[in-house]
Length: 383
Image 1 (cartoon, rainbow, N blue to C red):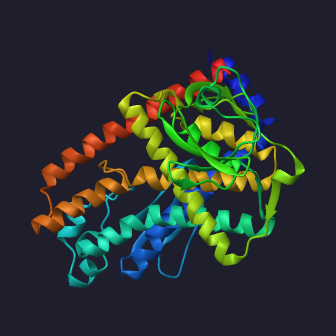
Image 2 (image 1 turned 120 degrees about the vertical axis):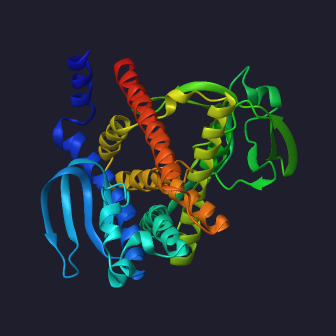
């Protein structure tokens, strides 16, 4: 099976340049900005930073800045970390022996002795930096290239589909779903794809008048342009490709930022709806992917050019920022949960309780990684 998987990996992006390089670029960019968020707020709070690393394991190359921070690239490019003064390891576990021997000045530079509000600010800065990176990327693309959109006009209705049963007709223009305005076909598609088996109230414009339809998208497996299988909601309509339905919107800076915030929120909303669907049993968990899937997508998207690749980086940045906010010990959200408890109690949890929490968090993270990697391998061997 190993050789079979390797043959797939080689074919996915034309070898090293087409597969590994895009993956390293996308992941390193996202990780760098995540850790930079922690770094900048920590330095602003007066915390001494010992190490800023992209990757784990042995150092490949690095340098020291004038503040004594070691900036380095390490051998295992699957993440990164910022190590603060007083930390024992990359997971920011406190070095008990070192902390006990610190004087007052050293304590003021150590992360663990900062007020809880400063520690929370340093921790949340990483995910917020991921969201900010995505907004900047989306805004830059909108300003440089504009935003091409297709009207949400129906060209054809598939017989026996959810749309057919709801009463859609060719020429209908979707203007709202569940009371939210729809400006283009892609926006409508995003809502429908994440609403499988949910009844939607859809307002269409037909012959100059508005008509309200009720449709329940069917959950179906579809293949994208690369042959990847997705389970999404389908109405059973095709869009109009008439020239008058294609528009290119020229976007200024303020509108670009507004649109990119909306795009970022759309990714967050779709992700949370999917996770909710998995928990409720409406969605299949086999869509969860890990590093292999990210690498596969990076190689595939890179074949279309740099702009699609940087947009993939934006989506991945949002996903990593959101994942890190989950209240799982070991992730940023787990630290924030501990700080919230500390703020309410007026004192931190005991070292024993925190140690148990981090062990549980480590077990959850490892299980998720194993499950995602298993999904990746199954996806490769069946695609």
